[in-house]
Length: 390
Image 1 (cartoon, rainbow, N blue to C red):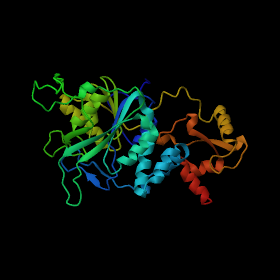
Image 2: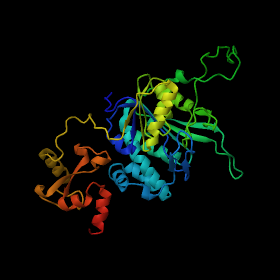
Image 3: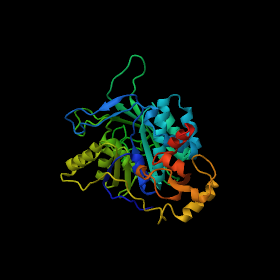
Image 4: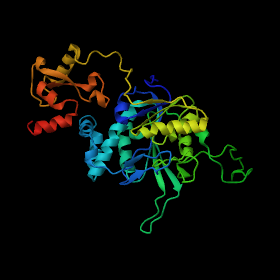
């Protein structure tokens, strides 16, 4: 397994896409993510709660999507692009583009024995499963869990909506799974035997894919007030089942820190990412409350530097220029006009500030005009400008 290029117990504040692009490949054993659901709702933590100030809108439009993402998916991942085209609304398309580019990075980060659990609801779970099938491979799908919870209201117009969905995928055919760690109690009295006369297993029965639990109630001691907070018992079950002591757990939407608390309690290493600065404070507060001491947590706002790509030559070196010239046939990657080598310039496809690296896979040749029009923006911006004749 590759070495991580961050320290244990690190919380990054920033866009998780840019941060994940700079994390070493194959370094994470377990990923749990509870991203926005595209629920068309706004969320905010109550004033006076631990999470006061945390808020987000879960309504998506194409204005929320970096054109670079759709361009990247269309150019390099046609199967994913077909799923985006199948979306019935612009809102769904923008949400799926947002998720697709992040799921591609999460797949890259997983170790061969790693697993991913994506928490969603029936609003978009069917589309998200298609994305995961395209990225991981259909054979790597393991379970669709129904998390049935109490609480909430009922409707006289339809059946009461009382469950979320958790999609479980493995990175390869040899994933970690500790079934005995998450057995559940039998529903019979002690000493009762099976119909064939054999003894019941005193450790309990193996868990199935319907999980019953409670939402985090207003009176719960673990409640932070953070929008969409999930109970600690749910995350403890996932961490126990799909990782071992010392393994690395990642939550790229770590929000109210429940994944980090569960991993810490169970002696796993962990790393969390969230765009809200409030998340880092919640992680420290919650772990301090449980340990009774100030936790040794690292808070970072920079992008990590990848160490798994080997020693890279200067991006503008002669070797890169010659390789790219051969790959592109001497054509500018923007306007597609043919140029002599001396008139083409090396450009980063994904800018450094967005997590791009100097690896040749992230480099291209542009003519001087296209390079200056593009700047540090994505290729979709350049193409739009060229179509407008600017």
